[in-house]
Amino acid sequence: MKVISMYLPQYHTFPENNEWWGEGYTEWVAVKRGKPLYKGHIQPRIPLDNRYYDLVNEGVETWKWQAELAKQYGVYGFCIYQYWFKGRQLMEKPMELLLAHPEIDLHYSICWANESWTRTWYDLEEEVLMQQEYGTKADWRKHFEYLLPFFKDTRYMKIDDKPILHIYRTADIECLDEMLFCFRQWAIEEGFAGVYIVSAKTAAEQDTRNELIDGYYYFEPGYTLKHDFNAYKKLYYNASVFVKLRLNKFKKEKVLERSIP
Image 1 (cartoon, rainbow, N blue to C red):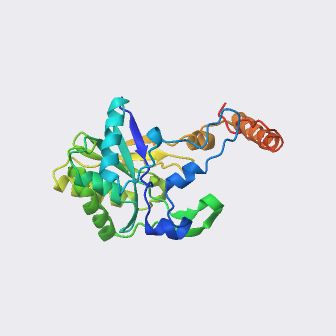
Image 2 (cartoon, one colour):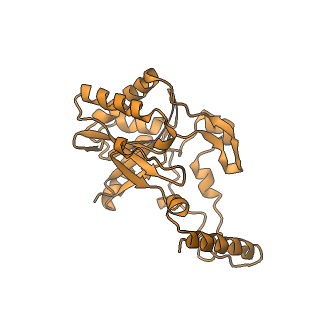
Image 3 (cartoon, one colour):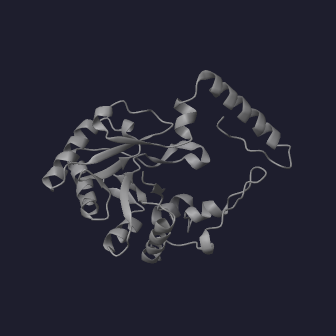
């Protein structure tokens, strides 16, 4: 068994985040805003060596450092989130830096985080910032051609000579059958045995087209809370969260509000 870390590349500024969340916004802003919610809850978290790195301005240096940390602690590689919106991308520069520097000794793969961006953090899910659309075969070809140099990288993770492509929410893609047929055919034309597709089991709708998917990973605790609780566990969980939420309004020492029994 290999340990693979899901990798969020939002530790650098880019124009869209500056516009949507405020000038200079990165994930570090959210990290620094962390507040303890119960006794023993250590927040905000301070990164190792107080290193608030920038994945673009300090990208190569940071990738090398993280690759060494991964080796030191038994992490086989990283699965990097990609934000592709029918040709337009967000946060692509860190991944492109990794590709451009083969001396960085790191196994990696890509996870297409294929959901629309909304103001969910402010309970405004109806306000769409970037709409996810799947387009036509020409759009799929453009996506495949962008991914191809990564697939050909010797560091890129493969199973049975198939580059691994994670897709966060396959159930959202009505044309998944046609899209994956094209991806696999194009990969074979490039000398691979196909593409190895991994889907996520999340709190959202579950994909039942198992014949299209080679493997799954679980996005917890959302999957368990939504899909793997019986009626009693759901009732117990919801009741305990309700009680703890209200207790914490009055208690000086907070308690953990959400825990899976």
